[in-house]
Length: 345
Image (cartoon, rainbow, N blue to C red; front, side, top):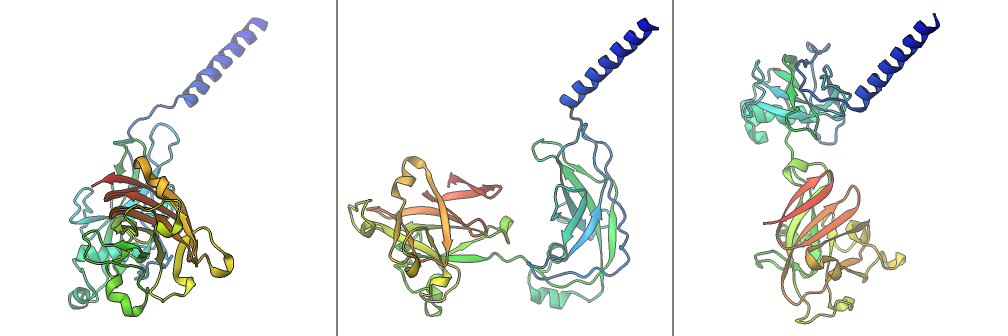
């Protein structure tokens, strides 16, 4: 009996070690099965929203693909007016982001669906919608999508298609928001110069040329990008002298010189809302580096760059995290999360 007990204990220990090893070294494999559930409310009216800020959602629930281990996945959906909901045909199918991309129980904004359905119907303006839409509810078809962002080839699309059957269409489109830059700046082609022109309605035509826009794929994310040239104040400016630096800041509306409209640099006196202060960043741009710093709301302090020549720069302003990034030259900007990545054009 004693010998059998020892053997049993050793076998149990071996199995335990083997089990732990399998958990410590998970093996990835491509899943073969993935399905989306038929919506419980598919035959009820699904009301859409035309407001980007509306948080209303509808639901799609799907299974969790077996990747061989408990992977952190990203879920999204495809929508189409074609009953087949082609998985790869971008003319007939559009992608819908989930508000909770790590969850198989997807909540999708009704605004996002409204934008997608207008695109699928070919309505590129409200006028086209008004003349083209017959008022009948649409039936929209969906597939679920899952992938592990860090693993190429891990994307899998649900083998089945589900639908929402009663969707009254309203017009919705994504429009990029913008902010303005003002200061010792000009357009890259040199045609328009700002020179701290009052950011007011009277100068609205001029300020059309000094907007930083949200990139199309980041509409609603409060990330603004623009390329402008810094105009020199002197041929040989002293980078340590604020008065020699070409200065700039940003405005969120054309409201004149009211401090409440400005996004400025840190520094300056509180009772003056930072007015007349210059945060010198010349050295932060040297050697191909880019400057990153904090943005202060309702603040009139400027950033300053000392240059003796016209200097094109790429600007990124994140008004959600209150950050600014400046890179010399004309650059293409992509994002890793919310962090900009610059590459020369």
